[in-house]
Length: 382
Length: 234
Ligand SMILES: Nc1ncnc2c1ncn2[C@@H]1O[C@H](COP(=O)(O)OP(=O)(O)OP(=O)(O)O)[C@@H](O)[C@H]1O
Ligand SMILES: [Mg+2]
Image 1: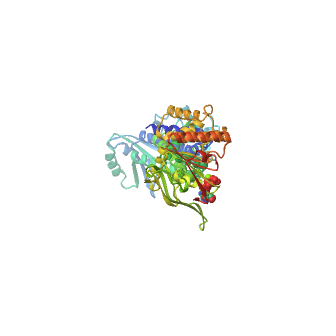
Image 2: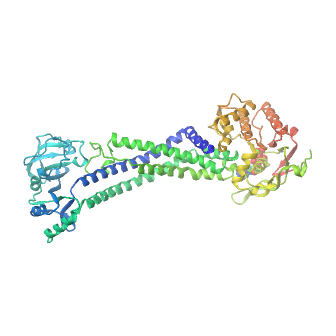
Image 3: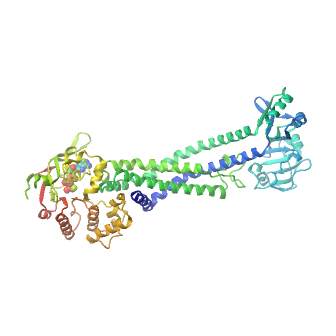
């Protein structure tokens, strides 16, 4: 026991003694791990937020099906759906995209009485009359919009909207480039009357399958699609896996460049080390003891590098709002988002990154140390 | 002291015996250098043996093989009748730890450690605590006249001082054998005299001493002097 403690202590001293090398290796680890940890934290945070909003949302989503894609639902079925037993609320929505000058905005149209209570982070007021809109803060900032300003969208120049409120910056990220208006205005903007992009159905718990059967009776001659909360949740998750995939591909390139840097840094000063190992062996150290010492050194340096990387990631997300990295995960934002990013630092990715660092430094040092300590001491002392 | 071919003392006293030791280095596949050739010596316990000979005659090579730092190309080394040339690396390292202390021609101190840390380094894997290591190193360094140089790094010491640090390190495990390769070649006459005297005292206390040297003054205190030439004992 004392022996292992001695070796651990000596490993710490060695890291301090070879300060330059320690710093260089540490920097390499930090450079490789920080983007990785940051990306995972943001991705986890956004995923969590989206799943929360899915859970707080409707129980069933009804759309029509055209060529296998979601298509608009005629409003004429609305009353019949409302009457189904177990249905508590039915909300038609229009969700679309359109350009405001050169910027793509997400347009959401809802009837005034269907606006969820959770939308409260607003400066100004909610729309009440025709052609009044509430605008996301990202858009408002970009076009310097103030309350009372008027604008029109590219797809429907004749319709003029008046800004009556903004989503403030601490609202959810989805609000950043949103234009929120009445269902009627949205229908007019897109030139579609009496249809909605989807119908959200809220139900009493446990009634979804009966509701589905009744819906079938109502809509049996139409190509429709009914999805429940669980499926929407799966789509959200899948979407994030795709985004993570794109990031991972980019990251892999950086990683491929970073690993040789670590190897070089870890191997740096090796000839001095080789001689040292030769002397140790000549004075009675066992190969296993030498390797234990080297492994302790790598363990400590990885622990240090990973800790610094995690702290830097937290700073990156909280202090710098994930600049340069957040746009991989949140399509609607620019390089530097103007709102706090949702982020979650889970223990598993942190642990994983520590193991990654340990693996890399071990690869860089253990083989050469093992070689140095298994040849005869005369050779390694040269 | 009966010299020729190095058979000294009676058989039961023999500590180390070599049998037809050969070591050759092969360079560029055809050209072969024979560093030592067909060396058989008996070394009695508590004897003082000196290997003398011109540069390149194979002294270092022979001592390294006897001291288990290197393996011979052919031949055997026995210690207390056991063939150590067939030992595993682990067993050899244990043997060095328990029985052998080395003093190298060019000191081989670890540059970034202080003198006392260098001396105490072999104790680390033995699990000795800080105080014990420091006290033992201090004791030996004081004996070597370096009581005021405990915290100095090797590059802050003169050659003679470094050599004395190296000697203190060789003694830290109370070895039965000290193998010294040119212990006086890099230091002045006065310090050399000290080193010779010190090795003589150790020998008087029963430590077996093997020295490779050009220094003819060692012959006076040696039990046996082997003359080496071209890898052979002559
Ligand atoms: N690693 C090696 N590769 C090739 N030849 C070597 C090697 N080590 C030693 N030799 C050769 O072996 C011979 C004996 O060398 P050794 O170092 O044993 O001599 P030495 O008697 O200790 O000399 P010195 O008094 O100069 O220290 C020399 O000819 C040397 O060139
Ligand atoms: Mg030599």
